[in-house]
Image 1 (cartoon, rainbow, N blue to C red):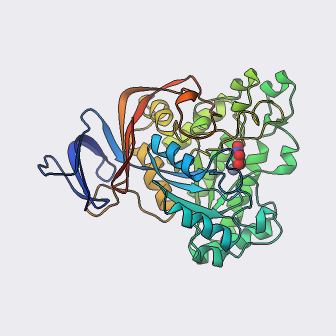
Image 2: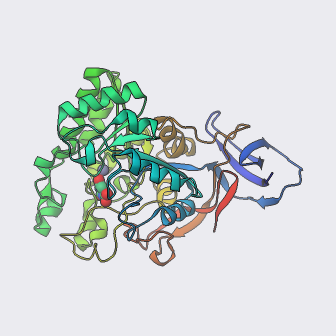
Image 3: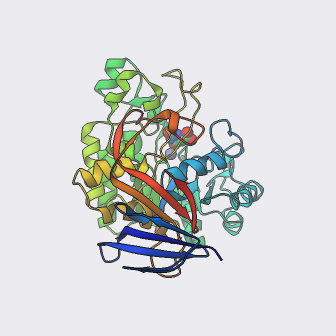
Length: 423
Ligand code: DOR
Ligand code: ZN
């Protein structure tokens, strides 16, 4: 029996929207007591005076690169980066090598994940090997432990297959996550189409690529009464299509990522591929729309789309693969640009960073109730976090926030009652 006592933490309680200085007693990995003064012996006692205490973050969109691309990241380094970012649960996308579309590949990952310091959920492919030709055996994958279905990295281009997937996933009670993008519109574009792409003389991607695909997913979900989740929402159009669909009662959820409410395509004037990801950085007008969607509840979750690539791969602006890392900047960037900036309160932030993604994934985040898994982040709302690529914990350093400073530095992360990170 192992115990941990956290003293004087300001606990973020999203149920009654209260902030109270409390002590937390943890035993055998679960919360046993949360109250104003706990005087008990514990194996370890931590003074969290001055720190905010929330549920461990649930990042529903990471690319773990394991198996097959472990030169970019692996299960171990991804877990270390997550721990340093206060993230205790991740959903790993299946665009690995090989892709996760067979029970064998899925079982191997889930077996190895049992030894990880964080909770690793694994998504499986909607279509066999992400080829878009035939559905994977969704039922077998669900039975083997798939937490979601997605071809993320690519859209499911064939609408008939996507409709079938939504229906089958509804029967299995597994979420379908859509990478909503029309590849015919993308047609080789590498950044958002607009003033910046014209100035740089590079091929742009019309935002209709995202908007039209989002609209298709709404239509499919509405037609069959099933549900769909839209990944990495980045455009004004997509936010408003989702807002309208929600009003009409379509069963839809969505996520955005910190870069879509923080950065614009002006960052690309540096011609640094660390600002290239898919969907691409858009304009201030889109950033404002995403923030509005966050504030009014249209957007359900914030996920990182943590997508590690090596410095070598990112060296050439035009040919580099898309994607940026994000686990260690998730909380500071979101806290600074949403809560400190006065857009939302701290409770709404933790709904988007933990409770809503947990609900979408049919799991439960810690609500600081007796018996809850002791997954916790402690962070300093006034503590500065400077993004120093030499001090990150993953294998790759392709962050779009390098050298920037944010408030909300993570000081400690507890997962299943174990201290897995200490600043
Ligand atoms: O930027 C991205 N990177 N977007 C994706 O959809 C895939 C991801 C990756 O796997 O690198
Ligand atoms: Zn994607």
